[in-house]
Image (cartoon, rainbow, N blue to C red):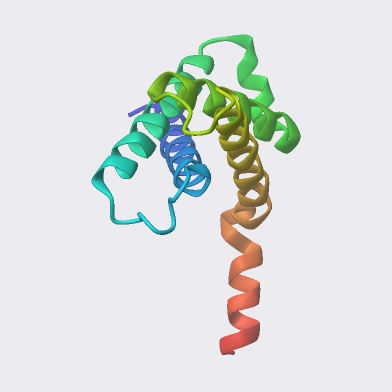
Length: 133
């Protein structure tokens, strides 16, 4: 497998867990229904669509946005909002609030992950070594 395709597979996995987690967080009753198959199905659809859109963007000049942590977070947030809007109707009274909120939370997850997991999770390993010696 070429290096470019390995990067795309890694990008898909990253763009799958962030929207899925954001969708489970923003859906009404998500924490009380964490074992609900219906909630997980919607969250997986959102993550899958966002991951596929993220990989498709690697074939365009927009792939440069993934290199900057702010551009990456913005792009992930927008793609998640689109994926969430396509996956299901909003559970709130306003039809766009949930999708926008899911996109914002996913962008925040991507931004935080860019700090925690950069340089092979150097920050996490450093904290782990400090706590557990």
